[in-house]
Amino acid sequence: MVNETRAAGAVSTLPSIGILISGRGSNLQALIDAVGSGRLRARLRIVIANRSAAAGLERARAAGIETRVVLHGDYESRAAFDAALVGILKDCQVDVVCLAGFMRLLGPGFCAAFPERILNIHPALLPAFPGVDAQQQALAHGVKVSGATVHFVTSELDAGPIVAQAAVPVLEGDTVESLAARILAVEHEIYPAAVQRILDGGWHVSGRRVVFGVGQSPPG
Image 1: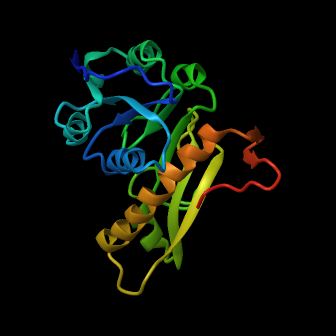
Image 2: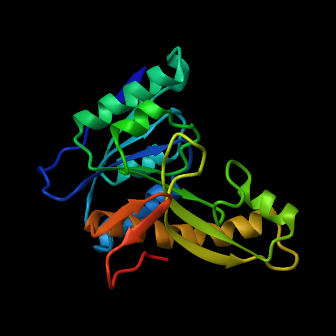
Image 3: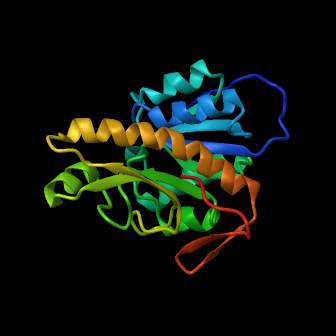
């Protein structure tokens, strides 16, 4: 099932971004705010959710962004679901795809459709603590520093080349909720900056590293 809401507006010459969400969309809101303030010079072309109840859909609609709901349960395989997403994003001619709390692992077909053009934000200093419950993992391991990572997406979970990172100290007495809240605030800062840095160009991927040009450095 695909539900659609179209937003009217003039065609933009700015780079276009497609955003995938599953839930509240707080990092989506950070991207919306960054576009509004001019810190992110791009057009948020479409927001796609795999859950019809995703609160982030209302954030997108309030900002005048086209939205669609594509329910993964309606497809017989992950590859078929991925192909549906790719078709929509290609039709929208997006330049970059941003994951903002999208709780589905993307397969090789999706990643091949947008090589080095899919970004994700993760609440840990990768490669430490990939996957879900990263904050709980950090507390369980007794680390003194955690943080957030922006990385390119590959079909391997949270293993793509790192674009930007920012550290967040783990305090005595921290709970999962308190640590997550401080990391989230940092996510909202580094994600738009990292997306803009990628849109600006002047970088390449060497092995597992994102290499920025001479005199240039990654955000974070």
